[in-house]
Image 1 (tube, rainbow, N blue to C red):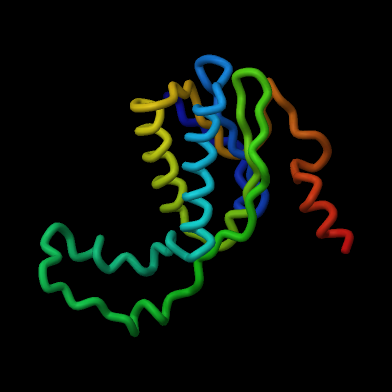
Image 2: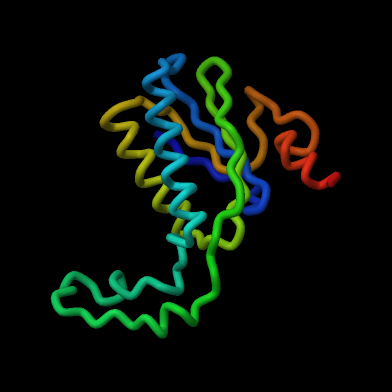
Length: 152
């Protein structure tokens, strides 16, 4: 599976998934559940690189003392919005406002999609950001609901 990064704006990013065949309803469900779960973790602040106390300790976490005060002093790292998944032929896409979540979120997403592709749904590539020549985003790269919110 190939991973490509294009022009990246965390507050307005499209993610593109190319399947090896036209995806079945079950394959669409797997992909959508992965992205939705990832987004909800981000919406709850799960991708805050300032608060990785367990990771920083290493492999030996037995009897680790978790510092709640240090965790409270970090900046919030929240995702803000997710559009609906769309499909056309071999492609699926979804729009995100990743807000202030940290880049670790993208690593976790990529790791998860790679495993999903190995075990359940063959995915040829994941494109993060920018445009897709095979399926252009009309207008300003924002989904309709985002433009409606700007007008209100």
